[in-house]
Length: 192
Image (cartoon, rainbow, N blue to C red):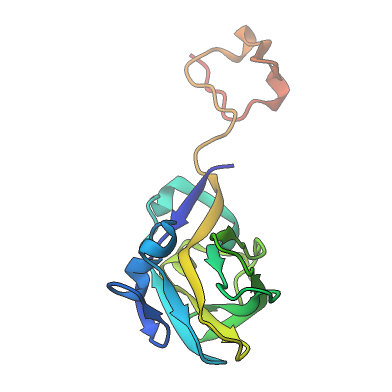
């Protein structure tokens, strides 16, 4: 299935800090300690907004899932990492809260959320939801030093519109199969 990534483009609620520039800019590339966002205090929170989808509404038949992708690290030595809670928000509805353990490691590691097949209200994801989705990040624990995330995006998996078994301008009597699709399984055959 096709996918697209939604990149953070702003902060609805500030709280985390970036080592350079803005928090949302720091999360655009997986470039290690060159740019990152970090949180030090327990329950320190920020809420990210996301850029508009790169695929037009009419090109999407349905949305299969939305998943948070991150690369992060907890630079303390000798500990088991620290937790960051993620939560989806669409409009006034929040949900799909999940805890990601950011590993104790010298290099950044991929730590991804669960692919969510419904929006926070429990309905199928809609194209409008993608334009309104936010992700809240909360450091869960008072452990020091700060937890760092260098990359965050939303992976959207969708079904492309317009892909069916349509054949135009060929007489149906002249079709036995097309690339191993039986005539009975071909939609929208128009006679020539």
